[in-house]
Length: 108
Image 1 (cartoon, rainbow, N blue to C red):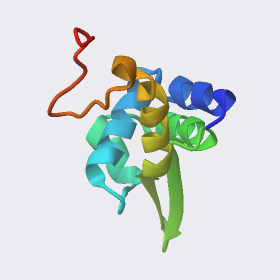
Image 2 (cartoon, rainbow, N blue to C red; image 1 turned 180 degrees about the horizontal axis):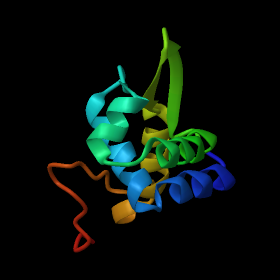
Image 3 (tube, rainbow, N blue to C red; image 1 turned 180 degrees about the vertical axis):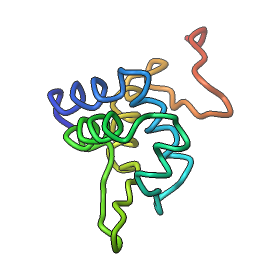
């Protein structure tokens, strides 16, 4: 992933409402959820939600699809995983980190 795209993805998440939306969509999984339900779950007004979703969409952090009269939003797991890999690729002197083990910075 290019540095410019990394910065855009991080910037898209560097706001409290957008981070809450993204975390909700990650929990929803690949099926995502309609915008109205996102608004209800987060307490974000529909007009503000639209702005935040647009910002995250431009950074490729979320995708959308039309299903009937609803727009379904999903976290873009490919972008998320690429971002996480970029952030951790040089972690722990090249020793792979896992959620179970974490980073042991005391390793030599």
